[in-house]
Image (cartoon, rainbow, N blue to C red):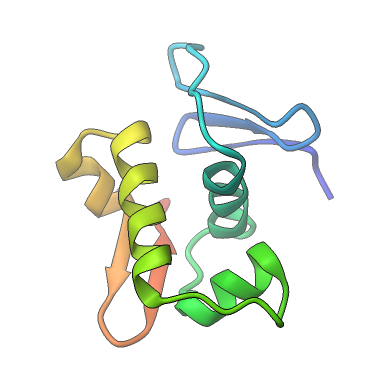
Length: 104
């Protein structure tokens, strides 16, 4: 798999664990926030349930409250985009989960 890729102008380097904004500024993410971004963007435009996200982040034996994922999503949106854009890019799909959208 590619270790470096771009999505919505963001450059994600999985090997170096670096995220850069379109203007090349580095974004400071926690380990869990970075891992969540990778899960949501490989591939993008796929709806993932909270359980699927947790399985990919921590493995199938990890259990967490729904609010754990919701909080992580909120922090990721705030760090990557202004609030309006964040909700358009990392979409909440009612009753299903979340999706990182590359559509404008």
